[in-house]
Figure 1 (spheres, rainbow, N blue to C red):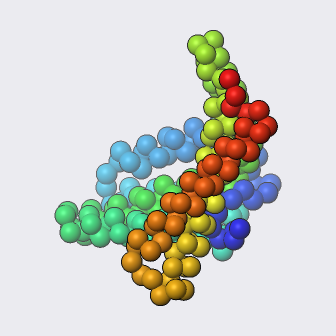
Figure 2: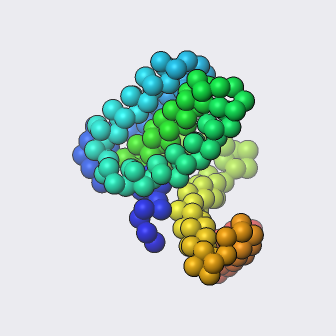
Figure 3: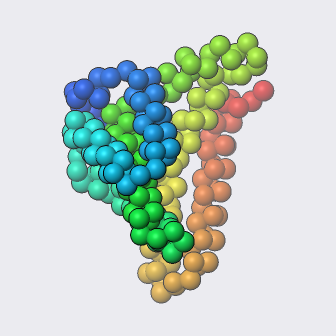
Length: 203
């Protein structure tokens, strides 16, 4: 799989953010994201963006991977901002664009400095008390892990299917949406069959 399709792939390192506890990073990301969403002003939007950029510099994230990870986010944010421009004007559109990029950059910083297994282990510890009410922490963590791991593959399938359709001279969205859905469903069935063959998910 092309690494350029991965969103926030973990990068080993010794930075301050790499060494920070998982819980602290996730809590910080949650508080920061809430602040970005709740504080509505242009200066604040650029201030939050500066904080996210500073965090990326502290984490020493590879700039090429960072640019590739943000590319699709920026495209989506630009489309959404254009809609905001038509409805509310340029100021609101700019603030929306900056906020979306800031949130994506903050999430990338956390995922590039934290291994998925560490996140899942922490999550299991947090929800273990719920075992008393019938929640299986291991199964919940498995579901989350599969979801995280499937995102890059799904994005890659979408891009591959679109490029294949364009190579055949097909430009209409239906030319690649239908094959894309079929491939995603097929991959889901393959994953389910593999888990069932290993006795995972059986009652």
